[in-house]
Image 1 (cartoon, one colour):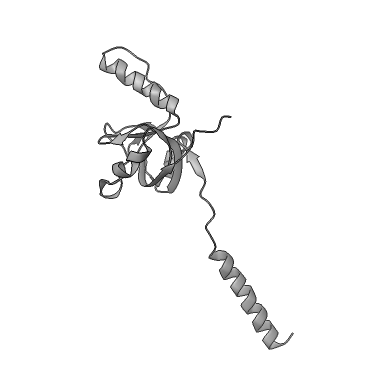
Image 2: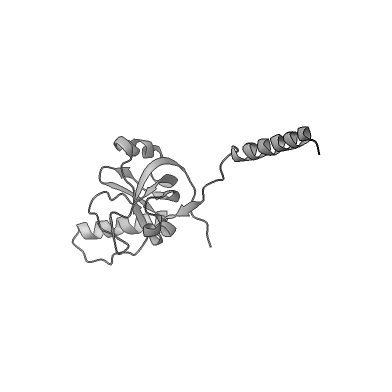
Length: 156
């Protein structure tokens, strides 16, 4: 092999490496609300995408539920509590969604409320104590960056 052919082979190999490394990034796995809640300490500080149901988002209330049924279950609990009735608190996974940079997330989320979404953002466990929610207002389990339409969870 001549010097010229070795240089040419090295140049082709280098071009192939650069070409594949500059290609599209591998898609990020979309986690469920249940997966994130179970691993919130491990995921603390990481950017993730989470799929779930977003009933509403504004002021001190922006919570991502595993499903529409979980959201409705919490709605019934809130009605019972406001009527001073005793009620069992459901143990359903949910994530508090922060307000985003410059508090702009509520406006971004408005077209997606009452539907299934995928929210990408940074996980924080600052409002968790022994895995349970510990903030009384809008706890930022997920500090959001983007939101997109999603679908209901797959049935197992």
